[in-house]
Amino acid sequence: FVRLNTCSVPLSPQELRQALYPGKFVDFISDQAEQSQAVKILLGISEPDFRMRDIELMVRYIGFKFFLSSYAGNLRTFLDDTCDVLNREWEKREKEITESMIEFENAIQAMVDIFGEANIARKWTGTEFENRPNRAVLDIMAFYFSNETTRNVAKKNGKLVVDEFKKLCVSNDGFRKSIETTTKSLTATHDRFFYWGDLLRRTLNLKIVVPDWNDEKNRIV
Image (cartoon, rainbow, N blue to C red):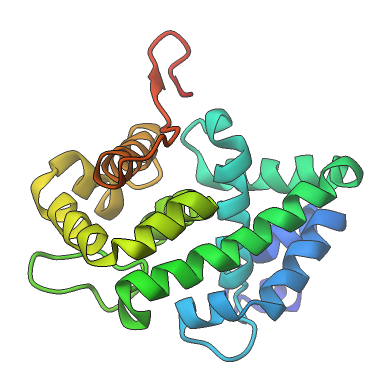
């Protein structure tokens, strides 16, 4: 309120979310972000992020992992709803959410093992990896590498995975647009989850469930 009243730095979406949707899930995810070494590596920080970007990355992961088919193209509303629903359903969903956060840490470590700490969640430009993490790239990699079988096979074939990701970034216009321009749209969200999942499925020869598109519902399924 002091920041708002003095017209200083505006509150970030996650700072507002913390205030507007208090509850046990929000408390849990805040504690997880404070303790997470994976997120600190990802963001290049040693202390909790003062704008709560670390917390929002985790909420994005949880949201897409459990509610992807509910995504309607408005990311802020989607993350608000994720916090609201899980606050209300915390008693019955605490175990699966807690376990999923362990898998999130494992997924980030797998990304470090495969891409190297300096390149995790970075877009390939055609000549190099970008300097900063790309949230859209993190979304899809955390989503698939949170599966133990997928990440273990991917780590065994790390060079191949990196090479195929590079090709995807430069040769697939739909995928490239989905991680660099309108990343929050419904179409872009579907495209990046589909193309990366389909690539992993074919490259690693695994039975991976890949999100698809339903024309009648106009939704990811």
